[in-house]
Length: 306
Image (cartoon, rainbow, N blue to C red; front, side):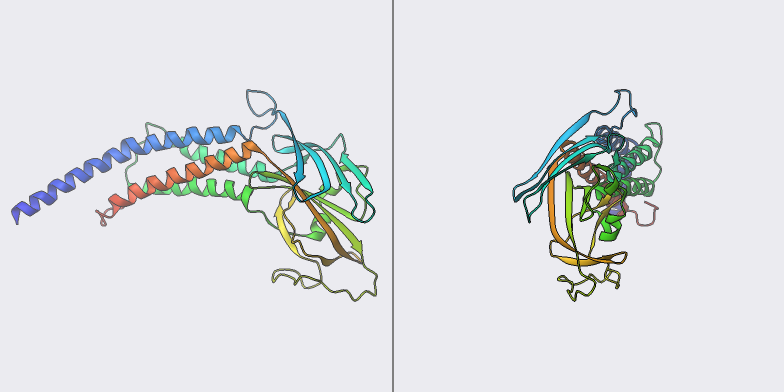
């Protein structure tokens, strides 16, 4: 019995020494690695005048789709804002070519990019608040920090990958519709948004229904859709919603009943957004790995606050 107790005590001493090394050395090594990765990610979101390297460069993106040539466009991105837009639309019914572009005095803020950058900055702040001289005393303290960092990184990733919802009337009321010169025709809606690593442009063509029309919605209204015919709910970004449902549907705008007759979507990959998403994924994996190591030790000392 004495031999067993001695062995147990020796094992406990070894584990305690390993855990002290984990808290005092490896945790800070992981925090430094996370800081380096996220600083690289934050450089991808550089805004005009926000850094020592000068204004963010303008990037031109040619939007297209392998399935249609109805819409073609060039969007100019500078930091988190669209500074220029040049769009051509071929009307399906008569092949008339429409051209519209941003007014010279206007820019459109892509709130998704701004929000993602802000969450990255907050994650970096949390990491730098525990510098090399800081001594972690318990595993629980490390877990709390990792949870906070992972929350910010998950929010940053979700702003780019998971748009919320917005109805078609809200698109019509969006400031984006007033950005163009010449003004958009009354039977067109336009939306620009981020989806994963892509910059997307969606054009909706509308058709006004006669007041006595008995036409009904072709697609069932979602459960969270207003019951007064406001139409399908679409993914939202603060700068506009995302991809629409492809089926035709009717909705109400003021005293008019409108039908979405055609939806055209074109897109282009933004390479630095792809980089940022990779950095988010790698950082989240590092956080989880450190949490797992802490949890292994906590299983040995259930009576201690790890």
